[in-house]
Amino acid sequence: MNLNTQIMNENILYLNEWMKYNTALQGNLQIVGPDLVCNIHGRNEAIDISDYYLPNILYNPILREHIQDKDKINAEDLFRIIRVNVLAESLKSQKSHSENELYITKMDMKKDDNNQLFLSFEDNYGHKFKVTKNIDQVLQVYQKLAEQKTPIKLYELKEKMEMLNHGESGQC
Picture (cartoon, rainbow, N blue to C red):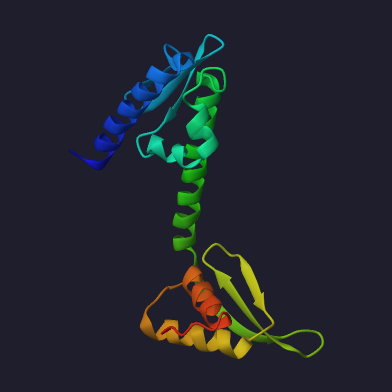
């Protein structure tokens, strides 16, 4: 049994259990394939929950209490709460994935109009960055990362600089 199948089986069990305690969920909320489906004003709305573990919403103690009471939460409310959670998890995952795709394509030392040195670098999407503080540290971290491998991921440079700024000792 793969992980998604296991998640969906447990999601079905939890939803069925919630329906036993809250009759307002019955007939209006169901799992069809990978989707949580809700009948809202005579129209079905669905969200793919195959990668979302429904019991995660129970970490909220108020929701955990309200889910059992038909007078406090109905199928539409619960569906919308779950949809927001699923979408938030998806955005978080996309952000993490896109951060992994950003890498530094060029880095140069430059001078501004006041003859002050700054570091200029560009990522693979053409975004330009300017560093005016701790230039030597940034350059050292960049060079150590460059020795290890290419391409140098932007999040790695940022992570190493944050470690240095917070006084953590870490190998670059």
